[in-house]
Length: 224
Ligand code: SF4
Image (cartoon, rainbow, N blue to C red):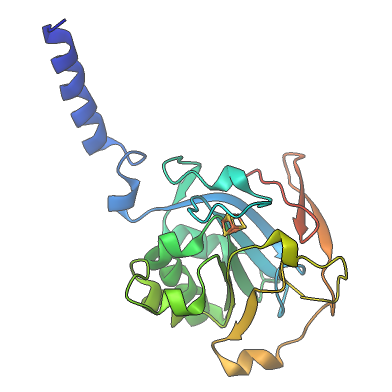
């Protein structure tokens, strides 16, 4: 079966990798995101907040509402940290950003950079969800740049989603899917920020292209 054609194909694939921001995005430092909404009040306190969903997660929690975000190889939308920060800052109503997923800590370095820029420019805060526990994020097997990212986060909501620990009571575990997940106030001053709700809510966003997004803890779908 040997012929010269597969070799030529291998060579052209090599050239494509060098030139393509898609195949080389990890090396290029670009972020791979799968959803973005503006002015959310349902994804953490101190809103309105921009919400960014990242692509890629290896936790595979049974009952996860966002299995489309699991594939770590799938490129959905690439954006630099600077561009994403600019997008968040372009809305004067934003008081912070919430990173959700997917697993944000798989892209910790770039997200830390976004948080640094928006805090320096306008004092915006960062809330971040992670399927890792705080102990995992600070332990020897933590994902690359976890410590750097943790330094930028005001409120970490940690732990895998456990369907058996989901309560039907919307006041049982605000901003969380299941009761094992913890609110870890990494910057104690953030405890003083306004809480728009004292229970879990679901928001509906209608994007300019007509796409409807439900977000909060009653179901999520993405389109950017
Ligand atoms: S950590 Fe979140 S995105 Fe990942 S599998 Fe669990 S619930 Fe789904």
